[in-house]
Amino acid sequence: MKKKIAIIGAGWFGCHIASEILKLKKFDIKIFEKNNQIFDGASSNNQNRLHLGFHYPRSKITRSQSKNSYKKFLKDYPFLCKKVKNNIYSIAKSKYTKLDFETFLQIMKAENLNFKIINEKRFDLKNISGSIKTDEMLIDIEKSKKYFYQKLKSHLSLNHEIKKIKKVNNKFLIDNNLYDYVFNCTYYQKFVQVPIEVYYEVTTSLIYKCSKYFPALTLMDGPFFTIYPLKKNYYNIYSVVHSRFGKSKKIFKCEKMLSKIRKNKRFLNKKKFLIEKQISNFYPNFKKNFKFDKYLTCIRTLNDTENAERSYKIYKNGNSFNVYSGKIDHIISAGKEIINFFKKIKV
Image (cartoon, rainbow, N blue to C red; front, side, top):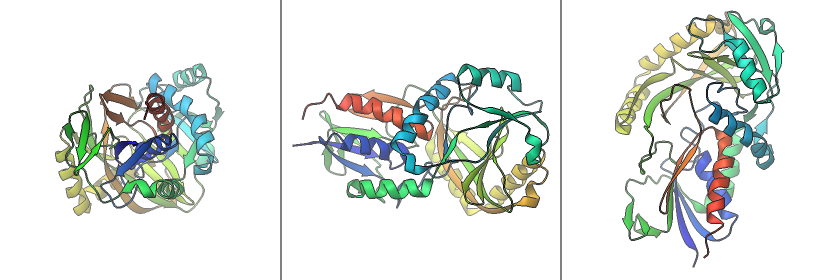
């Protein structure tokens, strides 16, 4: 009889890990998702950038994981990736900037990353100390959802929130069924204690339609913003400062905050005003060329570090695994780490 695995959370990490384990043909897998479709939480409420490491000049471990996973992600999922015509990183000319342009260049050169120094004035930007063009790509979220749903639909249990996991000898009881292994792939990190200090944070990104061509722009490094392509003529905008509503070590507090924000658009509209004002300091034609479409709100999990670390980690406790997610392309390294463990298991 095949051993049984429960995976909680049908986002990027949960779906990729399930796909990799299924290749071994040694396990029965059930994926539990509290929403009515996969990728319905943080996996779709982000900018879906395929990272090479440029976004994290102050976190070597995040750069390393991104750089190592980038080519592997393209090899495994080339059909889910799109090229971005001009993918720009600019260093702000501001007293709040944490890293000057020359230091940024030195770090990226040391990583042997390919980039080209450009003149940002061609895109009507101002208050910039320097800019580079990179080869980072966009992950097509809608195509990704369709792909993983078709691949995993016989293993999915949607609209199914797991509220309790009970340990029975060396197995796990979930809804009256016993499982040999359990994976917590929820962004909330609800079920398993991890040896790091975890915070929950309510955030929003804003979707705009643009009337003319605009590049993918990430303003670095500090409390600034990113304007990133979502689909044709549409962009996802996130501000390091103004997209955040608050954080707590208690998930229920953030869930309550998120519900309040979604019911009362006054809070979101205030954030929108501040984000537009912030962007206009560097791109004066923003309100002329961009028209607001909608808000995307969610709760994310983070370890509050000074160097802006966003690396993945896997914490194993007996037969349970807690997957602390990093960037999307980190799924490749995380999946490989888990497969190396399960290859050794005899059934």
